[in-house]
Image 1 (spheres, rainbow, N blue to C red):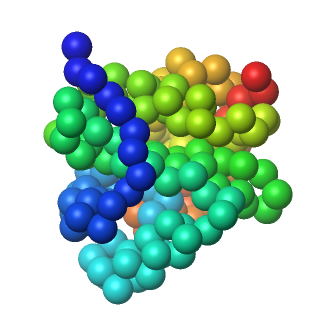
Image 2: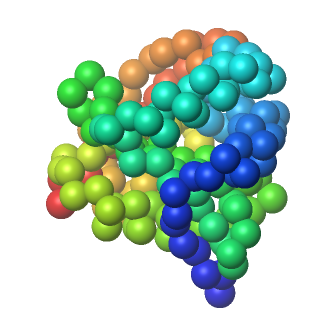
Length: 158
């Protein structure tokens, strides 16, 4: 079984994280992505902002000591949300589920919220295994698909 750990995001992680977030299948599944995933300047500006923000917990996800993605919590419209991105080559191995469990130990805020495209069964499973429950759906424009889609809003109370 893979050993999953979290640590602070380092400058040396940024190139790989940028590449993970440019993966076409990852973009399709995440759906709610930046309008131009190839815009490195926008990525760098965003990462600098979130790394400096006091209300953001951003961590690199490691699998067997190697960078596998990122996970974070952030405040949006007064609610703390979680999000993650795992290298597609590592999907289906339980890495996101373990990383989320570790993040939940770091972030005591409850309730916590998460969002996923309603057809992203993998991400919905990760969240539900961690105790998140669907509380609403919304229709929003998803830049990653260039169309309006349904998004499931989930909440963790304990």
